[in-house]
Each structure stands twice: as C-alpha cells, then as structure tokens.
Image 1 (cartoon, rainbow, N blue to C red):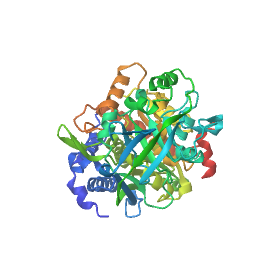
Image 2: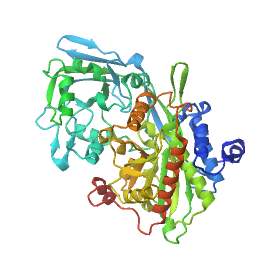
Image 3: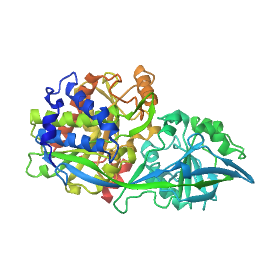
Image 4: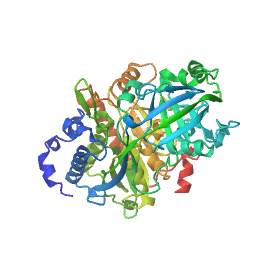
Length: 526
C-alpha cells in the first residue's frame, strides 16, 4: 500500500515527542475522531482513511509491516440489516394478538441471522445460563424444546466474574440454548446495569450488523430469532405468570434465585433483511526484538479503530465520532509506537502493534486476526488491549480487567506501583467488560490478555463522572472532540502502557495463566 503521500499530508506528526500534557496523543484523536472520517464504520470509506492514517504513522515510526498488504490485513464481512417495513413482532395470548411497536416495546436483533418467520411458545429461564463448574442450570426440569427463551441479562451473584462473563458470551449462550432445544431468545436488561439508555439503543437499532465472511465463524448459526425487550414494558411480557418485573429485580438485588416458569403466550416474528458484503482493515506492525531466540515471540498491543459511522441526527449532528471509543485507544497505541521510535529500547521479544476493525460488530476483527494471525500463532505470548480507557479525571487508580487471571497482572502492579498509581479489579463485574473487547479473542486462543481503564473508587466524584459519561456519551454523537478530556491523564496512561509493554517484552519467561484462572483451560486447547 502506498502511504508516503498521506504522511506528507498530515500535520499531526509534527507534534513534539510525548509530553505530560498529552499533546501528541490528542493530535491522533483529533484526526481519527474528526467529522471527515464519518465515524469510521466497519467497511466504510472513513474507516479506510483511518486505516491508511495508522499505517502511515507506523511507517513513519520505522515499524516493520505485519499485514498481508503492507501494514493492512483485509477482512471480509457479510452484512445484514433489518428492514423494519417488512418485519414485525406479535405477542399472542389465546385469541388476542398484541402487535408490538419495534423500537418502543422491543427490538429484533440482527446479530443473529433471523428466520423469515417464527412462531413459538415462551418460557422464562432466569438468567438463561448453564454452568457445569458449579452445577448451576436454569433449564433443569423445564419444557424448553422448540420454545423461545426469555431471560434477564446477568448472572447469579455467587458466580465468579470469570464464569459469569464467559457463559454470557454470545457463542456460549447459544450453545446452552441450543442444547436445551431452544430456537430463539428474548433478553431483558436489568435497568440498573444498562450502559446505554433504551432510547439511544432504539435510535441506533437500524445499523447493519456483520459476520465474518470466512466459513465457520458464525457463533449463533441456527438461532432463529433474538429479541431485546424494553425493561419498561417487561410486565406486558410477564402478564398471566403471577410474576412481575419488579419482583425479579428485587430478587436479583437480594442475591436470591430467580424463578423459572412457562409464559402463557406465543411470540410471532416476521423478518425481512437486506444483505451485502464489505471489506474492512486490520492494521499490524512490528517493533523487532533483540534476543536471537525471543525476538520470534510477540507481545501484542491492540485497540479497535472502528465505531458506529453515521446515524440519525441528534440536534443536527449525525456523526458518531467515537473519540473515546476508541480513537483514544488507537492514539495510545500510536503514541507508544512513536515513543519506541524515540527511545529505541532493546527488548527481547518483538512487539506487535495491532489495530483491529469490527469490534463494535462483535469483536470480529480481532477474532479474525487471532484465528488468522500474520505471524506464527504459537509465538503470540500476550495481548495488552486498550479500549475506551476514558481519561476524564487525573489518573490515580487503574482498573485492570483480567488482573488476577495471568502473570500480566503482576506486571501491571509492578509498573503502576513505580508510578504511584493504585490498581484494582473490575469494580462492576456485572457489566462483563472482560469479554466485551478484543482481548477476549486472544483469550479464546489460550493467550494471556488484559485490558485497562482509568479507575475510580465507589462513591467518589470519579465514579459519577464515569457513569455520567456512559449514560450521556457512550455510543452517542456527543462522544466527540468537544467533550472534556484530561490530556494529562491520557499522557500518564500512555507512559504506563509503554512501560508495561516494554517490561513484558523484555522478561525472560513468557506470560502465563494463573493456576486458578478459569481461562487457563484455553491454553491447553490452543
């Protein structure tokens, strides 16, 4: 790929070396989150321009191309978009039909390729989980064959965060549902754990979803329908069961088991979908190691570059710029690469800088790379992922997802201690953050991985800032260049990330899962 012309055209690379004010980091964010990239939707022209920009920066930093077309690894996708003019949901109770309003009562999910027509009975299955390790089974004794499962998002409070997160992943959940004879699912979110308000979810529901075009990559193949139900209308679904949604939430908050029961109703769905194909880009580059043997091993530093593109205008603004999600993370990778160019550290292992596409579509770009790496698969020893780290206040505390799962957590603790930064576990495991970003694609291939964010303590103003951001800006057009950002915190985060990367790359022993980690099982399968 020719990138020289793009290098000359970009003023941002003229910014001086990384400084405590975060100027260089912010310059990368400014370009990637600008309106002219139109939200960097997977497979879009704006995404292609963003990928070329990253490739040009990697070239400027003297990194070795690690794609299949220079720095680029093309990724092919199949697209699916629900045509609501030919789609409907109807709740049937006896002779009575209740036609549901799409976007208000419920939404038909398009991450599952829906059957054109489905009509089946409903059964409430608690959290819809089966966890062999603890003998927990939401389907025991229920008549579920040929039914549509209704479940509350979440997991029992006595289930470990790792188990809860893993079994709520799309692939594992469908395995569980399918084994119980279920043909589709209706999920209801706990309002207390919703990152995005229903109104914004509904406004964004028209976006196309994607699957990897390569065979064998559809984790929900065979699922006929998936529906997300508005919690505000949950009692309409539960009518006639003797149970209420308020009762369910009270049981969850009290840590008590959820009931299981048949719902005296049938759900009828008709769907019409528009199909297509697109090609998008992963971008990869290598900073070579110096050890004659260990240089053939790779420590990955990853971030996703895609966002949501263009949607319905909100106060005249239709561009989902994705400044924090995740131009910020890509900027950290670029800042780290530029720092290596300047300091030229001798590290034993090679560092693989990886910017992936399709995270917003279900971690698809990282899934493709992890399954089709451009370096030897068995030589990838770790992944340090950066996604929406949110520099909204001074960095005094770091939340690390996967902190106690592998020796990478020990490395983070050591680096953070040197910098006077506290380290903590995920304060909200119910959000399942550890499986919701690209590190999970590497974990499933047995590779130790973690992700980091600016942390907060419960009950502090930092927690309020963090949660307000989720409510007001996460997947909203307001995640743009006009929001308050603590650039000094970003610079501190970047220094920590760079030190961590160098430490892991220079250690004589490669990262390993802890003996009691749930995810250790994948290392034996890889």
